[in-house]
Image (cartoon, rainbow, N blue to C red; front, side):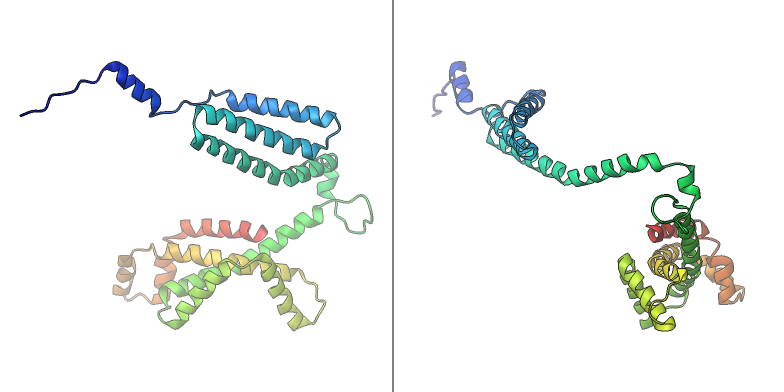
Amino acid sequence: MNSPRTSVQPSDLSAVLSERPFTQGSLPRYAPGVTLAAAIVVGGVLHLSGVASGLAAVAVVVLYAVAIYGWSLAVEGARKAKNRVVTTVVTAAFLLALLPLISVVITVVGNGVGRLDVEFFTYSMHGVVGEGGGVYHAIMGTLLITALATVISVPVGMLCAIYLVEYAKGKLGRAITFFVDVMTGIPSIVAGLFAYALFALIFGPGVRMGVMGAVALSVLMIPIVVRSTEEMLRLVPAELREAAYALAVPKWRTIVKAGRPTPGGGIAPGVTLAIPRGVG
């Protein structure tokens, strides 16, 4: 025997929904802006009344966090209210971390923008003591050392990549690959110390040579050249090599004529990426 069905009245359903709502409201879009403006006004009043600027800024953040939390708690619920407080704290921490950078940029630009003229870029500091001179020597030195480092690193990196792709089969190849991977993450200060120690051992302590900087930069550039060249060489179809071997072409000639020209368009961007790595 079927049990009698109980009908639910619309008034009962609305009462249940009002007691346990399935959704929460949301703050209007202007709520954060209005709250922040009010907090800034209060902070400005505190600063004008003699409170230090740092304490006034902290008061602005605290007032905003408390106000937006209370407003969001009443309208959106505890979860969204906590989310807004955490967002406020993270944003305040981010802005606090940016303050030193902004201060440095403003100071440097404000004090140095008046010196950016033709003389600054066309005169060097040779024989200049005190005010005057320019950065011509620094620009030319950077270009010369970078060019010399490129001359050193590009041939070495390309030959190393060719060896890894075409010849390396045993422990030596794995060792070279390992050291290339390690050199990729070498800090610039370590490369500089290596170059200085190398030339100090050869020419004695206190040596000063521009080629030392080029050697240090080449240590940073070689791994990038090796990796980019190696990846491009591995893209050469095996059928191309096999066809050359079938025609009794020597291995070195196969590498020069078939292995190198095919990925040439990909090697050049690798070299281009290595140069900024060294300059930076």
